[in-house]
Image (cartoon, rainbow, N blue to C red; front, side):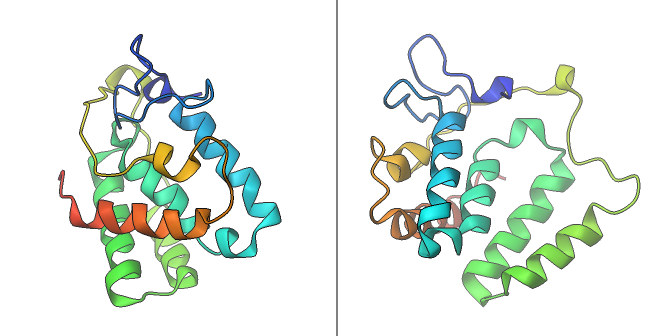
Amino acid sequence: MDENAQPAASGVCPECGAPTVDGLSCREQLDAIAAWEWQDPALLAQHFLTVASYNLQHPAQFTDAAIAGLRELFIAHLDQGMAVVEVRRRVGQQAAGSVTVLKPAAERRPVLRHWPMTIADVYRSGQPEGAADRVRAWAASICKTDYR
């Protein structure tokens, strides 16, 4: 698990501010939601938004260029309807060759930011019903919040 996904002593992620829910850190909540995708085609269709939303709220592990590129594609998908297949193609181009998207562990400095929604709002104590709608609402809230 990434150190930036570890809850602080207060039970809150030191980067996204999500509380632990059912004893799960924000990263573990993400993993649970990803597991729900196998049973919910509507949620599976939102996989890009789920992972991109999580990563945008946990930028410390990524280079500035990687986060900027992800945010650009995230907004293009949400606001301009760019197809996920095109997003994936462009991500592949951006990460091709010797491009590094992760910072070395020693350089990762999580900064707590207060978001209108976090993964905890999607996870909702293990309630998979309606999760696809909650992912879309979470993504929209991130799109409207500019922490660049």
